[in-house]
Image 1: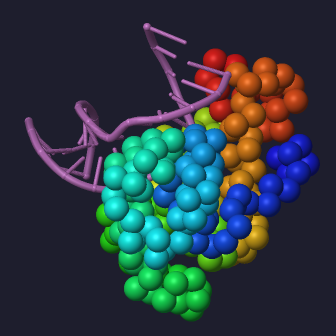
Image 2 (image 1 turned 180 degrees about the vertical axis):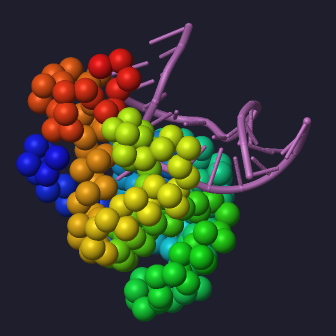
Length: 205
DNA sequence: ACCCAGGGTCATA
DNA sequence: TATGACCATGGG
């Protein structure tokens, strides 16, 4: 995949805070829609923890509306930002231990395993492998993991086989997503698929 | 008109 | 503990 697609240089975002916001907004949502929401926040000069926590909910909802689930996400964004400020902002998070921080993030309403791990890996550069729906589908269809496997099992498949290297985990997960985005409905040339002749993304390929 | 998208939470049996 | 409902916009 690296040869086929090249380095991905994820996460798209200018700061750890922006990455954190993007990780929440992209839940079950096309990234294009998230870009619109982040553009709105930037244009309104609202992309900071202080302005988001201090914002009236209806206004915040309107700004992030294109990212979908906007009522849930507006409330969850404020929760995450309050936590962010309580931890001392980006420097505070960077100083925190990975395991403790993961538990704290998971305790927040609206932060599940993938969002927590995305923040840890892509915003804070921790060697945590992110599992998403693409990873689950692809590796299950390749027969490398079981369809029954939960998040911890999937994560263990990677972390038990790879060195705990944040740059490696970053690139690997980003390539999986890139591959999935290129799947056969978009580019029906399966002979060019770097994962093999039988497309591991689309069932009907 | 239908399907899906870089999930997560909550109510029910 | 295991499903199912719900959240909501935008592009293919």
